[in-house]
Length: 223
Image (tube, rainbow, N blue to C red; front, side, top):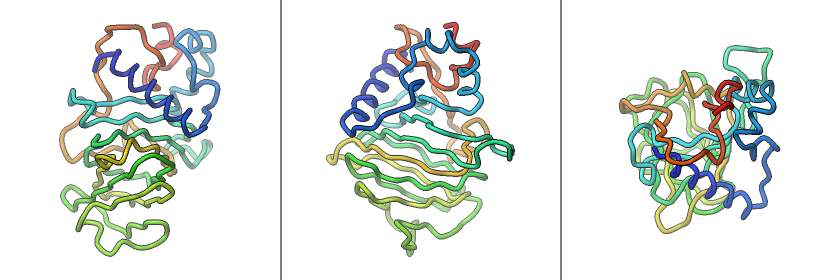
């Protein structure tokens, strides 16, 4: 994925935040130079997987299969001395699909904060556990039947082990969503139905607008 495309996706997400009056921690607007000037905090952000994340899942077609995220807070899975929860912001474009995946550790809620409609689909294929799927506390009778359509304000509870995919409904606008969950680990707790990569391979065609969390360590901040 070209750095210029990542930069454009980040600026689009920042514009959505501004439209919704949603503010980030100060490090959410850090430049690479800011990371270099505070290596201790930069290392903390990297260790907790905090900050920006733009991925095309290694498929090279971000507009169709990709996602922009911002992790606001997070602990470390398996470390009780850290926060036991995580919070992310999700920026999902119309028709942009996050491929089917499941988590072994993380139980999560996805909440549509604003914008368009989020469609969520489940499949038994590749799932390794099953539990009730809830939409605002109501049990979905058959989550495998048809995609579940969420309007702004609605939320869905996604159980561990269930393969799920989501996308922005075409014609309804980009979706601003949030994820509230147990600790998140994007290095070890994503199990894709297809053989995909979690992170994009970056082609440097212009300077980075923001560093992504997986390159925001004190070493990465010297870019």
